[in-house]
Length: 416
Image (cartoon, rainbow, N blue to C red; front, side):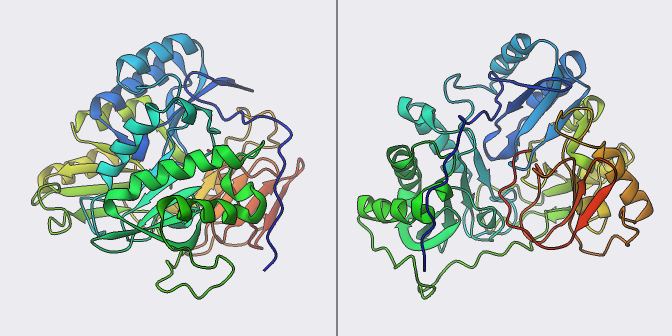
């Protein structure tokens, strides 16, 4: 097996944050990290109000379970509101709090509830001055064993193996590193420091020489655990990473056997697709009115958590006409798009309008039918920002038309 050489970046990572905004074609873009995608009702209301008063009227969901506001007229006022709402616990580390978490963990399925590990990591990372130097694209994931977020190829991933052990994945690969649950967060922090030791101008571990193999070797030594040969596929109990999973859409009864004392007995969580990942300020107001936790998933969907049956039925009745999609078979669960025109200066088309037309007509720009189960991503340029992982039909604007590309391509999608 030939190890890849390092990828050299010619510019510093400019991934936007809530304080270091990006000047897009439609104005300032502010991106807020929401660890594990978890938002309180009050925070959802705050974001909706800010979108209405300071932005373009919508909160956008990103492919890392974060949220962003476009066309922000007063970034300083937005930052003040976010701090007051508890959404910016660290001003120095705000761009590096990138944590993916199995969205249903502790409520439905999974081996263990991993939410506590996320909270511990966030506290310890924000208290570590050096880790503020991580690139804004560096990503950590916590998979509770169901295999939903591990395939998203975080820089370092914790994947629960059983009731006692986790696998520590490096750059989306299982190198055979296994530690106890009590060392999961230690392993994540050790990997982050090793990345800072080894990087020059790389943004991701996979961009290092060897694709992260050197870091995995060093991490195993630091943790004093056995490392299987990263060049072989014969690792016993290797974690199989599948990219054909579906986002959690629909009605989910809680399984208290998974997390005794954590999941609410008899409760329900609703999963909803959000067309093009845009939540209007008005819809934010109604979501906040449920007075229940909201989880943003890496598939630009939402979970409305801890409802009783009657409340869940009312939520569907009220919010479905407002745009939320609770049907897992809807084409909106399979069609995505980048920002496109007019928000992005690089875009060659208003891809959101054209993606909506494709959903309405069930036809792609080349006249082919939108296939059942087919993932389709509309992109305004060749960068294909926000492209889902796995086999995706790319609909790429060329300036005069669209090119429909059905050949799966390697993807390290740029958020959102």
